[in-house]
Length: 129
Figure 1 (spheres, rainbow, N blue to C red):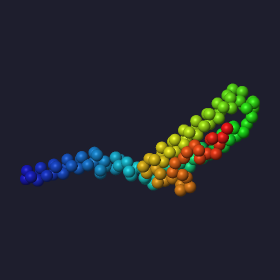
Figure 2: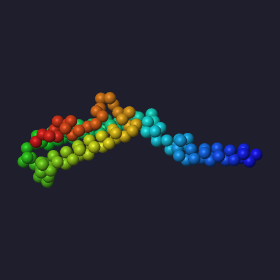
Figure 3: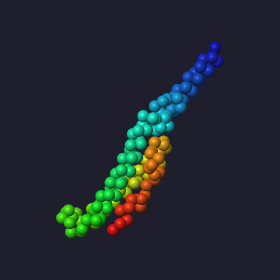
């Protein structure tokens, strides 16, 4: 009888350890959370949104570079300052896209039309003067 209760105690203790470490506990399993189908649409749209933001910043950068330096819109901030600000924003979005692209499970839900990683050089106006 002692052996039976000893074995039962061991099995219960082992079960509690498995549950606490997430082997059995559903809430602790990050792999399921990262690839859950309910999150797929949100992640898919997030990558597309970041890419669209980068494209918009590229267009804004081209427009800013095409504007004459004596344009009245540069009364408070110089053309150089404004171009630098847009490039900084573009850098930040490219870094965010790349960081999320490297996260396990997120890149599974990215549009096949989007690249795995972005570079600022991918945007035509980044290196223009």
